[in-house]
Image (cartoon, rainbow, N blue to C red; front, side, top):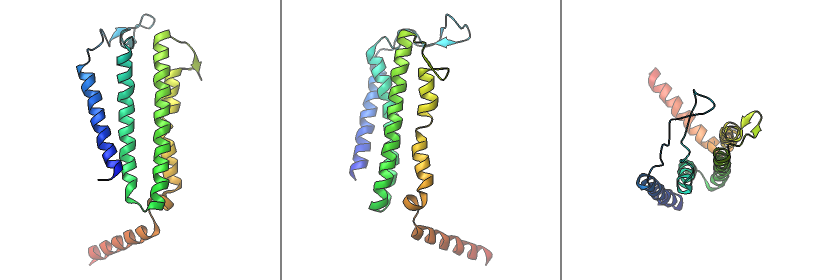
Length: 178
């Protein structure tokens, strides 16, 4: 088993410990379904959800764990290429997932600040957490997607692999037509 797979399974165990700790930690009082005082059709989480720093830490660790497991799974998928292409793919994945985790952290911090202070600062007409969610978390995967599209022929599929694929398709067509 290579180092990336070991790290993946080690992180999976760590993530399992986070989930176990979440299950064992007492739930906050009235965590959901509180009517908003200003907008009657809107429900808010209870005031006690983020009052406990342990709950907030677990919430961030849970999101961080999901993003990291996703990134590690993508990183493991890059290991099947030759070393020259593998390094470029792994760099692309690390930059993309790193940016996603960074924006997720900014989103989380702005959400905690927003709920703790009822901060009314807006960016482009949106509350800060919504702005980070729409324009940050939604667009950071584009780093990986654009890199994938632009460098597909160089990093993902080589000419040799394409020739092999074409031969398989031609052989299949010949078998079906016979």
